[in-house]
Image 1 (cartoon, rainbow, N blue to C red):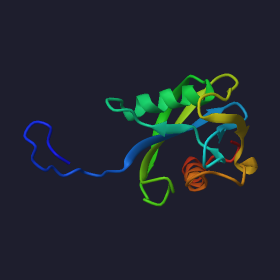
Image 2 (tube, helix red, strand yellow):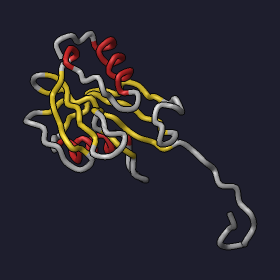
Image 3 (cartoon, rainbow, N blue to C red):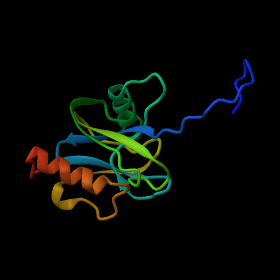
Length: 145
């Protein structure tokens, strides 16, 4: 790539994309979305962090965009960075737990939305979300959600 000012060659740095995922706790369990776009599977609400946006703001925005819920972030759980976690490319995600009131409604990238408990989680979870949820339930000692 050439510098637009001096026309010298400049290196282009390739870095992973930054994303967030949100485990939304509501009455009856946690909210998952069925993705509208490949990979079409159940997933945690989440998405890419916009330039100039904090992780926390991205988490609140993505939760609202995909579930129509206004969330209150509770804590940051973990960051997942395995380059193989998303076959579309190297994405690093930071996961938050959050609470919300009301009934979720699918919007934006979500084709469906539903509430699940640890015992009723769907088998077809996208990306590494089965591992994320295992870690969440272990760290939270939550058996009823």
